[in-house]
Image (cartoon, rainbow, N blue to C red; front, top):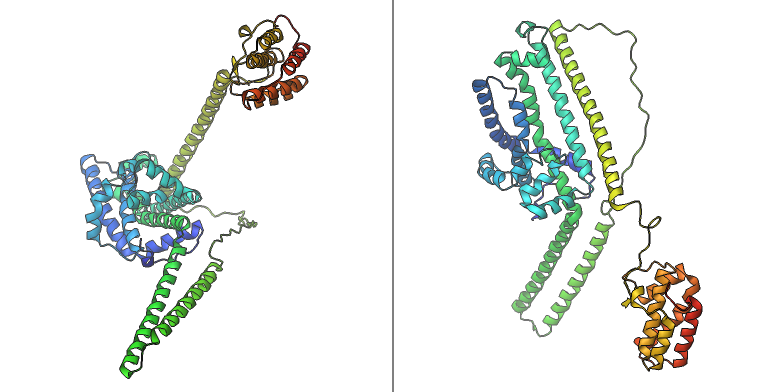
Length: 515
């Protein structure tokens, strides 16, 4: 990407500065932007008006269809703005030639279906149009770009939506005031019935403000989202720092070229004047080295000056609370002087808005209760599935194997210490010590209820014993030390030491049948 061709200054900006810059950029390039925009939208609008006015006799569906097709039209605006910001403003003919690629290779179906109601579509649209990513890479890229700026993109959508509605209501009310009351249908009908029963020319006149506001404001909305996309990429990829480094590199190259040219001119002068050039190359070489060192020092100083600029790496937000004075309302209000037809129309509008508000309130209450029921059902399912917990009220079941040893009671003899002494007398020291260690772990798990787990190591077993059966931990520590010396260090253990452990085992756990 040729950053030097950018027509905007690259510097750290907050979200709203970036959106404002995008709107100003759209206004600056309004002629090519709106020329391409209307070259695509107006033919579609004309076709829809002809279809629904001549075939159906009803044009009320034109506005929602044009609203739904906005993501398709937005791709034209992104194409023009993205080229204009790099100084390559495309003509209408070039935009129309690129239109098939903009519609078929930019995930248009997703933009018109599940992505149509995305509040941050102005920020994500350049990823589909300019980067051409699909699938998982596209989702990851959009997620990365949306961090820290997604809220600004959503608020921008809400602001432009409210601005569009305000302008539409203003123009609608102005036109409604200018239409004579004799041209309206009967006075008792509602607003929707008035619009549907009105003549075709009057319906077109009343729907014109909505279509005009939608078509005039949408390119500026797209431009604001595009500049928010540029701001996010500048933050992630440090475009401003890269551009400064490129400028410093060009300046250094120019200085080196100037030094080389001066050296070459000096050599030519020496040749022309007949001087001996035996010692001149080292002198010129030393001069070149001195110039390079000076250029490096100058570049380092320039970099430090650039990085000391408060605009780099610093972003501050100042918020202040202030009291707003409510406007004074006069106790005496003048009586309304509006015509009866317009007053009836406004009453119908207010009734329609009231009905819409009540419908949304009812939907919110029903939705809230549904969410509460779903949450309660989910909690009950989790409780029934996983229980209240695995600690209190649950019976501990010792594992069958622990640290590589089988500690089941049925796998051990009744008199563990006696069996270990018998193995010791037959000369099998390792088996005797192993049996004594297995029996100790089995008694600790089944009698002392030490909560061993299957994956515990020998050291873990000692730590759990110290925590849950501290009276047995000293014996287990001595037994574990003898076992590690024999099994891992391959040291010989005296028979008297093992006999002492057997005697101590009887004192710790008792003899006879395993309980």
